[in-house]
Amino acid sequence: MSLPTTRRSALLAGSAAFAGAMFGPGSLPAAAQSPAGVIVMAKQIDDITSLDPAEAFEYTGTEIIGNVYRKLVTTPNSDPARLVGDLAESWSTPDSRVFTFVLKAGQKFASGAPVTAEDAAFSLRRLVALNKSPAFIINQFGFTKDNVDGRIRAMDARTLVLECGAPTSPTFLYYCLSAACASVVEKSVVMARAQGDDLGNGWLKQNSAGGGAYVLRGWRASESVMLDANPNADPQPRTRRIVIRHMLDSSAQLLGLQRGDIDIARNLAADQIIALRTDSRFKVMPQRKASLMYLSLSQRVPALQKQEVRQAIKLAIDYEGIQRNIVSTTYDVHQAFLPEGLPGALTERPFLQRVEEAKQLLRQAGHPDGLELALDYSSGPPVSDIAQAIQANLAQAGIRLRMIAGEMRQVITKTRARQHEIAIVRWGSDYFDPHSNAEAFSMNPDNSDNARNRTLAWRASWEIPEITARTAAAVTETDAARRVATYLALQREHQQVSPFVIMLQEIEVAVTRSAVSGLELGPMSDRTNYAGVVKA
Image (cartoon, rainbow, N blue to C red; front, side, top):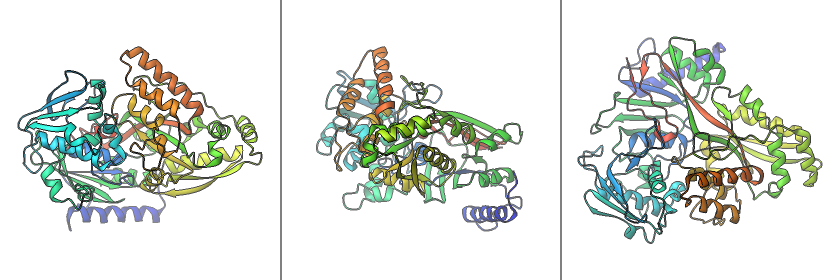
């Protein structure tokens, strides 16, 4: 792919400047090759808002956390339905309400200090007390700021006890503890940096106190992340330093990959990926992810409260055309809240573009001349291209969009504050259980601004008592077949009545230079593993 001379020169100058900053004056080889012992990865990282495990809830942030911290339990990428111990040696419950975890002996943080049950207890209590975006994953077991000190406690250096508010499915609890927010931080390091009652949150946004393969050395918003090998990791990661460079433009990523000044490109466009499949200098790695792209339609907007308007939007979009023409290698059309691969996922696609039907629905809703709405979206590809396609699709039906482009963190912050009208957002499952997405998309027990559980339904201001109750009941169903049937029924209803236009499921594609091996893409962001990455 050729680029205009001025743009190409600017991109190359940017690559050289970056390399000089990261590796020191004079350290950039003449051919701009990335240095030995360092993996340079190009990725869109403007979604990072924090790198505190109790707060981070975005794709890139949780991916980094998965490489910097460890959890009690996790799931292997080869079999994501299977639970295995990470820090925990064993776990048990006599009554499905009180759970005991015994930690493995000899585990260390990056500081060299031993990992103790008190560190694990502190990490979970801290998650509940801070009550940031991901806290609802643990809060749902009856933990509150007022009771958590008594209900999550260390019995000795290696024994941790969790006392839930009511009996719960053990497997479901364990899956929740495999989420990134349940990462274990070193209590003494975090509390030494605490300011007021922030429990170290201000410091931990841009620093780390974990025991994973890597240590966070620096994060500069919309610029770069640097990770260094944890000297106390066992086993040691194969590469001493990982540099993740923010590159919004896929053409810049491709150019850097071809020149050799980056080793891994994470956001190439569909046509670029297709071209590289037959190029022996590169390796193309696809991984279907439990990740969805959707529109959130705020129920604070009077027009969007009307079922006919929501249906009109769902019928105005050309899903197949967007997938075929923009993201043919990186997304599949998917229209239900459970992504394919999770138990109970619905693969039916009831929505095709039917413009005349959409126009009729708008007339029924009292908008014969159409209406105007605002669309928030990320300015980076492919979202920016998808946004333009949606604008054109909806215009055919009479819906005029005011386009508001921004960095992904701005879009995320706006939707979390319930200040959007329509927003293009992505959502990735936090653990391998249907409730991860069912709760997010279908439960809103408290629609007030100060609600504890701020799910995606809450962000859209969607009050749904009956669907909330059915979703809560589904997680307690012990018969696997009946539970799957319940989720299938919920998804069919959700497709028709919800303020969510679920459009696409991600197929993440990383492209590496042929000398690079060992990158492990996970079905969830925090399962993407850098520890085995190395280049010959």
